[in-house]
Length: 305
Image (cartoon, rainbow, N blue to C red; front, side, top):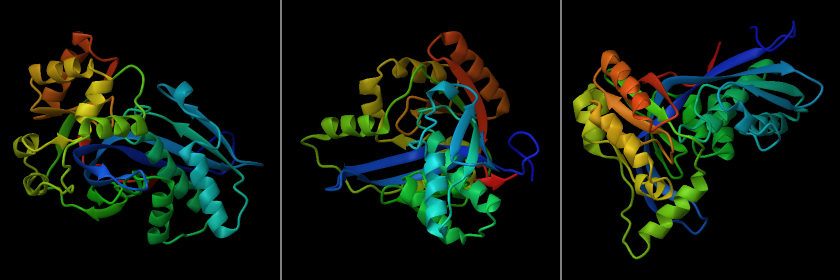
């Protein structure tokens, strides 16, 4: 396996972004987290993480907005290497190089994806053969979205989103993603959700049977009618300009639009590849976003290249 720089042996892992086609959010728990029913769909926007031997743990990054990616021990890729090394009694002496294509702080689990990729890359580099169940446990320690980044495809996440049940998908779905200026902090968005929810009864989150049926059938039109994100009002309260992006995409022919996760990336479900190209062009022309990406789903989870 090749990767990294020079002639040093390395392991490269490719890992997908995600979109939450449903994000149902429960009331705040005593531990500060929220119970979720999150239907994850992996999409064909990928980061790559290359692990190579080194004297100590270091992280580098390239790609769009790479300057906004932390290169210290707060990076989930670095934390993944430390966690795996500690589990096996090793020194996390590794260089991790991240090639970004997933929007940074955009609600598409880019940081979580890098954590899952680093975990898999280091496991292969160090020839550990950690059982998949143990890798998933380590992913859950790293963060709520990290286990899905390892699994990919489609899954229902319960608890904080880390308890996964893989879901059948009967076809290919086409997406356009509009990248906004700046990012949104997930904790800040949940804080806004809590403020907006004050005085209301918050139902226990549950997956929509109609949405699960649409996924299983590969029915784009049916899926468009069931997309839902309970965090969207909170994200729009913090970034009201995203409403114009959503309107521009649906006005250009998208079947449905929603804020991706905690935002500020917005996601547009479209009929096919031609529609994706047209909606992406219209979104850019509208001036309501900084960049667009087209992608399909489902996509495989973290994969050694």
